Length: 421
Image (cartoon, rainbow, N blue to C red):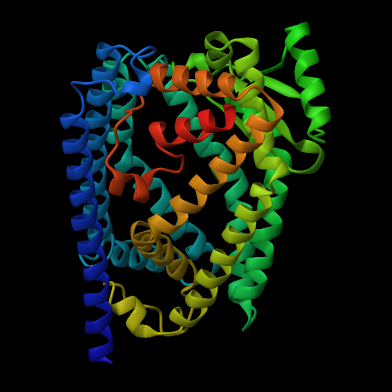
């Protein structure tokens, strides 16, 4: 047993070290590459992006890298504090003495852990919004609105995840095949959230209005009809209340599907460019990217829960992470917290696969948009978004393979412009 505990501890330490070293190497490559190329705008963009805008993007990229690396260091420090340094063990023991083993203690442990970790993460979240984003002119939120958003998110999390956590813990303590039933419950919950989120939850945080430009609305309806897409409609979100960044996204499931444009995006793009961006979003629908991503997510969850079903019965799994389990087996809440702490360590090593799959989807959606609308309009829309969002045009190729869910600017524009010829 001691050997198993020691080996598991070293595996855990190895994953922590791998994340720190790999992320530090990748961030350093990205910063150097961006700095090296900040003095010259790539030829493909010289007619549309000035040297000042190009250098702003470089400085913004490096500033985000610095904050991101501090966030990584802080996150790993919290991880070690929760595990090998005994933080989670002491929290678990305190709640056991106060409440005794059982459902209530498991729920209290999960809630306490989530609350403490949220508070630990707040300073960096504040810095990102009111320092980094504000420094480059992107932040438009106020301290009051930021705090209100936090309170809303916390309340919604408690109202939604509280009952879900209760059901999960009850299942875990009542069935030998609990992981399968928990997985089925989580799948059903995720599908339900995709239906109710756009209509009931998102409006708690933002205002959504139907597109009020009659000419554009008619063109949008025609394009959606051509693509065989039926939804609740096209909505405009008041993204400008919080940020100057522009975006558009596809959300929902079944009849709850909707396409959402940030108001900042509509202010920046022409009618043809808006239609091209919409066609890109419809391309994700037409090419089946949403179901494909859901299947991958559900499959990953099944593997994680099956692994946890085994690990939750092994004393070395807990002891190797600095936690002593209850001898009576009432460790469901503790096991779930440990899974939430350790599983993200696999994210970075697997990132080239997940990011590569996402970039492939984006290429397919671009190709679809070029078939349905003007490829030149899609290209010009992306150039405007790169400029207004201060997206670097010269990312490091290896860094891109790990972290870019969308193709880098030069590669993406090259594919689109090839479609236009």
